Image (cartoon, rainbow, N blue to C red; front, side, top):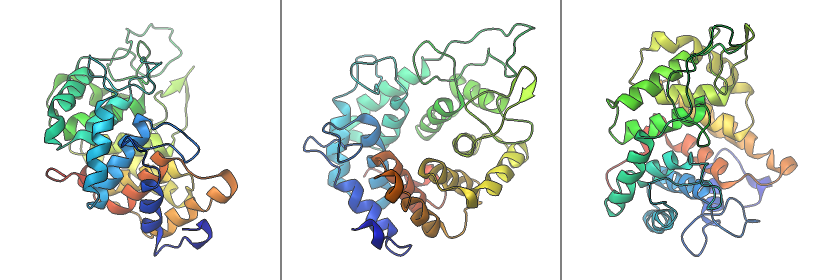
Length: 302
């Protein structure tokens, strides 16, 4: 479908078609048509998008098979086979394998990897310029680095959906997320203040954080953050922020109005910046299809 023909009425059809066209012969998904090799992040997000659509069983099956070939012995899924330290796609793989009985072993190995893995944490010195509690364990983007908001929230989402809500690591991760909430509301990459100056919130970090917190904290605990995100959602055009913003608010029964129109406006940016990558298109499609947020897309075996 030509980008000039995308409307609010056909936007989900456009997203589905575009994502499926990026399926490689080995079952994985390309980040874009220009890429020659599929990648775990694009594949995981495409699986989630197919789950949200509910009628792409064969595409899901072979994509999960491809994803299983990327798993390392310790259970991690790496961003790139030559850079195993970047293990954050493991959380996405857990979501992609959710409910798939054929990949129960891979699924369990990935869960165990996350549960026993953390970033670098340390007791904060009295003269530290950082505002957050550096001793609370979460998850990092990259092995042997500090934990931050988004990889921690993604890991919590995956582990909670997998049934690990009461695990000590998940509870610690939830405590880390709450510790990083800004006084004014919202989250950024994972700090509160630097040299005593409060940092600004970011819509996507806020949305991922509140998605992870559903069912674990009260509305009153994060109401200021929900209010912040609601105040921003009509201004957002970037696909990553918009997709997560819709999902985060939807998870707290604050689903925005005119979602298809908002996504159509976001897709129009492709005329200026080029085609969006598969994870972004998938995120936008899931936002259209998941009225209760990301966890709502999961059904019994697909």
